[in-house]
Image 1 (tube, rainbow over the protein chains, first blue to last red):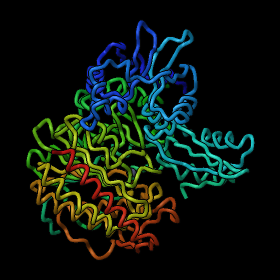
Image 2 (cartoon, each protein chain N blue to C red):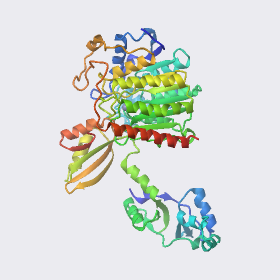
Image 3 (spheres, protein in one colour):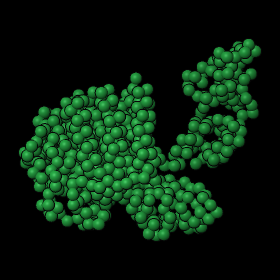
Image 4 (cartoon, chains in turn red, orange):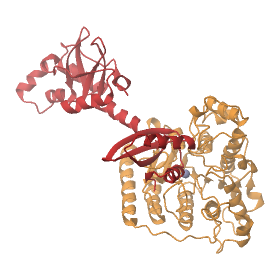
Length: 206
Length: 384
Ligand SMILES: [Zn+2]
């Protein structure tokens, strides 16, 4: 899955001379938390819902209050963190986590802004990767970290005519990996039974 | 025979054509076994037996997409279909089989017949033993289910102006019915099922409360694996009175899958047959209090074909019709049948089961209680 598959295309943006108040309304009305500031197709900066809320909040001090009359240019954060549209989503997740930001602007080959990707988009992607959005049962198998183990499991599923909706994996120790399958059958026990017969260690169902 | 409430039993030998294959866990013989047990008990009158109605394509297509229905029709006559899998057909769970369309349509017609008998006042209660195909979706077969008889029936009721409370006590989440009525305020769907953390289909969390017009009209209680009789009843008592009091249903549509039983090979709930009998009686009582006693019931899941399904569904019929349960399981019935798999799925020797010991019993009960309390809290917020 690449950033381009999960990003929001044509994100809303404002000009640098927009008042902070108007920018705030744009975010409120469209229920967005990240607003890029663009001019003539060029990305200048970014404000988040948190930056802007502070300025318009009832708790502001007089010097911050003065900002309300200003344009969004005074408030925006730069440089803006970006990611390329053909990067894998895990790369986007890593950049966001490292820099503690909730969104990245997405660029194409010509460095033009083509979209925005947020933490919510990444969560949706994770849900999609786990397969829970499709009717399926959960099957957990511990496999030796050796070539061909996963292939044997999927061959067995194929022989049973069972479609695998998703596979997630994590390392349990040096020699083993835990595989979490979501498989398209209501009769998951029958599949588990076949795997056990073939010598695999099925963790769930018992 | 001491029938308090005459209850229709819908059955047709057509149901036997719903054949998913010799190794498939879904066995249509369950209906036959149930009827024969009721007969041996002398608990059913011939005049209460009814055949399914025939259903038009137009009515079926209020629930299902046209291209999907056409696909099922083609599969019925043995055509090879390139795109079958796109529609959930030709899979291990829902393979195609000869006369698939007609067989499923007869099941749909059975539940609709049950609805008709209740709507025209002939009966207060009706039971279609073959029905309950709650996983079927708008444009997809799923989880052994081809057409969604429950949704077709709910639609016929709501189009006639009835408010329908749909209650699903199958071990699996009633995802098809919920989805088909997720935006619908005329059908309140309530499902009590084993949590979808592991079990098919994975949905049915407390936060699925309906959407748009239907916001507040879907309720789900995901139960802990190994939930037993007492906890199941307690959860029902915490939820149903409040739900029915608020919704004011005209009729209760009950999907009574019997796979929550401790012996069922496909799920992990731990009910006994006597517990299920209590559950049926309790549901009948709620229907009496909140919707003039009107119940349209169907079967559903149940994969201990010989051991559990006939006992459970005979008990359901006895509860619906207000008949006492005879002390002994008739020997004549036991002798009439032979289970093909006597170790895994024997003909039962007695009515009642021995409950199994669950070490985490208290923790499970506590968790289920918390789940309903959380559900009620969220729901009260949403339904305002
Ligand atoms: Zn079920």
